Length: 205
Image 1 (tube, rainbow, N blue to C red):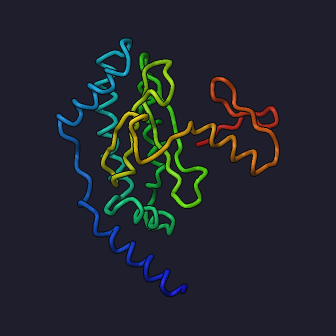
Image 2 (cartoon, rainbow, N blue to C red):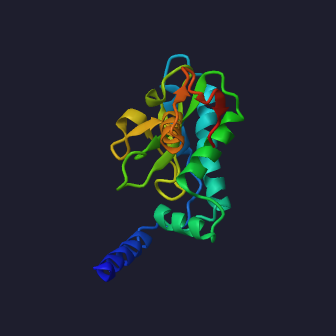
């Protein structure tokens, strides 16, 4: 039985490896323009110049990170290489962290950044992380997912509520519940999404 399972797993990896479309390429002006239009439409208060800049950075930083992470394979294969130590970074949370960090450097006045996690309570599916951009003051699920991991270094963007592949939860909500299970104590999530454990703030990556 174990031998059959190993064969199925090996076949799955072969099929995954065959799904690659070559190394990621820079975005086209039309791709950037479509994302900029979608970000600008998040709310009447969104500045169009900020929307354009956020779109350009989302695409250009995706391409830059793909080079830094040495992306040459579909995401699951790359994950295996990262976990084996043969690639520097490129797990989904690496993408989410690095994307959020770069966009945060812009100090947008009319946009907010969020982090979200999917499949955190599903042991049969791979947990997934993403960065999200929304209008200033809007909830995470009123924003747009910025997910370079999903297609192996090619930016996937989609409104959170329209994503049919993943069901997202706020990242800090997921982390708080995990900390409760791990430490067996109550973890508080404040209204501004800060995590307090034993009165001390916990800041996840």
